[in-house]
Image (cartoon, rainbow over all chains, first blue to last red; front, side):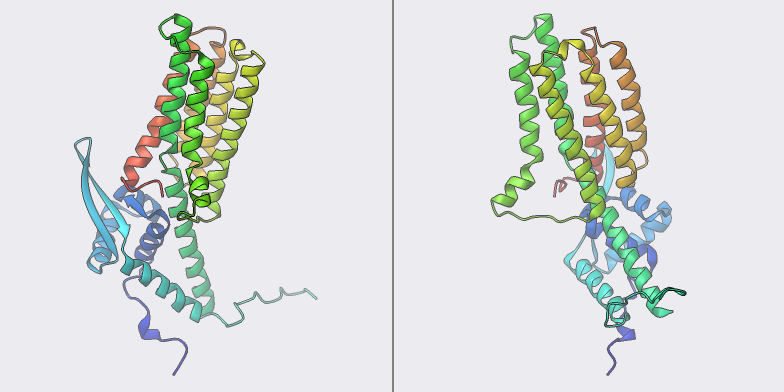
Amino acid sequence: MTDFDHAAIDEILHSRVRLAIVAFLAGAKTADFTAVRDATKTTDGNASIHLRKLEDAGYLAMRKRFVARKPQTLYSLTERGRKALLDYVAHLEALLPPSGGEPSEPEGNQ
Amino acid sequence: MIEDQAREDIAFIRRAIEEGGAYATASSPDMLVWGIAVAIGYLGTYGFIRGWSPVAPRALWAACIGLPWLFSLRRVTSRFAGGEVTMHGPMAQALAMLWLGCGIFLTTLGIATILAGEPRSGWFGAVVAGVMGIGFFASAWLARLPWLRWVGIAWWLGELALFALRHRVEALPLAAALMLLLLAGPGYLLLRRRGSRAGA
């Protein structure tokens, strides 16, 4: 049995945009659509698609409300999403050498 | 190399969490509370000078500065009371410390000017506006909210206007308007973007 299980990598979080959304919400706790879109530097359409996928996977909770008669969509990370992010980071860390991956000596040093 | 890719991904995740934390810090209700409280202080002082309000400015300012401080320091008091402590990354901490530093500077200078009888010189409002400009300008980068830099620039324009009016009582309602528009206003917008569960 190997230390790293390739098949265990979370396909949902393997996309950079979805990973950025989940990580951003892990820090922000709650944010509206515009904040998520801006943080991930993506378009409205692209952000919507990725948010929907994360919501379908149960990683995000979405709620809508009206502020000054305008609809606002708020997103927050679910417990499942938080666990998925932690597992994903754990898988990435499993790829690093056990020493913690100290940088090699620069050439010409020593 | 797969190891390099893994390191890059971990750094990417860390940065995104940092940005989220800084966003949350910038979206706390403190701006809204301070903006309204200080605006009340300016308007109350203006009302007292005009003879519309019986409340002495010193008592008014003690409340308008003391109460927001109690609100802003609620996390410290909750830590002493054994409540939940939220830890943010360096960017969010830098943001919080920037505003804490601005607050301490303005409060100590404000108390010193009141004790020295300097408020009538009128320069303090311009100093407040200048410091607010610095705070917003730096926050725009720390919280990755570029529009906040325009708030900082507007504060600096307000600083010039307040300095020009420093010997006139009209500087007080102008300062109050700046507090409402450029501190409470952005605070409300950020809070609204983040939703009702803000303030963590």
